[in-house]
Image (cartoon, rainbow, N blue to C red):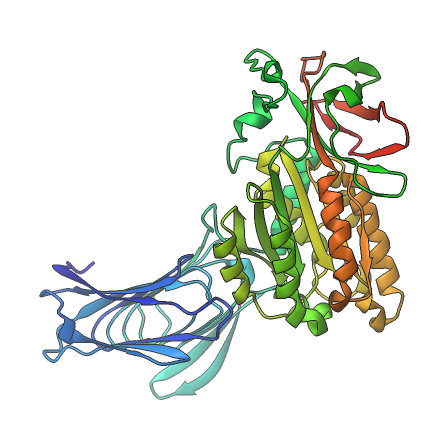
Length: 525
């Protein structure tokens, strides 16, 4: 390792949106280039001197509409290392003569070259296509034991032979990154697995099966601590101050359910005295029931896969309408399925202005349709950790998972497992089913609708059909009315022995001609 004696922050440039095709070009003849991808909006470039302090004169930065060029050109030819924090969504071109190449994280496209430096790539191996050309094979080649390359000789000359290493990803595997790297005389090449930080905004579909299995085992999310209202405190009702109860010695169960009349209209104004709850056929004492006074956590999942391409331009406007539907104290999140992957456009927030700004930069429509995986990942992202709160998920899709269409890259989660998991999700699922998928024929749309309807029913939600994303005007009023019919009903089970067994729960209404929809029970863990 070379000693570094000085550092200079050269740039903090506002990055374009994730959906933009912007390339960072980094050229550094005499020093190393180290790039780390970050989930933040600013591009940061730092120059670090090896034998002297770096200065502003060593580096030139040029900003163009589709690229940002960084050139490190010290006049005295002293080595200056570049360290770059690259916002998620950029492409990268990097070239150095005498320095090492270090690239860490998720990048869509990489073209990199080093003449005499070493190479360290720390990346999501299962989601990255790699082509590595080495003119002189290094003494040390390090990679995870369970990862494979296809090796071949692609050129020979008097100077030696060029060996090509290509990733061995299965055909149809969803990939985020495409790396092309060339090393002429490296002494060392190292590949390491990159693990995303906890709040990373992109997830791969193959992460979903572990989520579903965990839900089916009744395990709790470890992401964030549930709010006090969902674990130890019953929310206060202004008209009944005595209903505020805190019990540290017992556990509360909170059920989210929907109540409508026989015409499907919401039934507002119900209180705890209007509900009866039976757990394993034993009547429970309902402590609290509320609707308008209880904040909502609303997650909106937009299907931006290839099958919804003709609806892409309307997705943003539809999402904006659903955001506007929320009350000031409600929290809304927006997620997308795009490029076969799960994207967090915005986490749960009550900042409407910031949320609407983020909706202006949705990813492009593309890729496969692992819709079932996306539903699992959307629930796991935030709602799962908020068990006992008033949670709902709106899924805007034509329902055509690649399991239905029998195409490449179907969901890794089986539909049957997801439907079973939905029975345990503390979240009402509301698919906005786009019939525009009927144009594909082959009965795909009918199968997709059936699957999404069963998923909604399992969670206690309901499906809303629409001819297309352009024809949602009648649906908005229906969904808004439905959300007003969602109640949070809390009780302290008389059986406080939480041994992990399944507990059947039935919620009844004392008022006639009202109907209730809720999941069928929970695991007492």
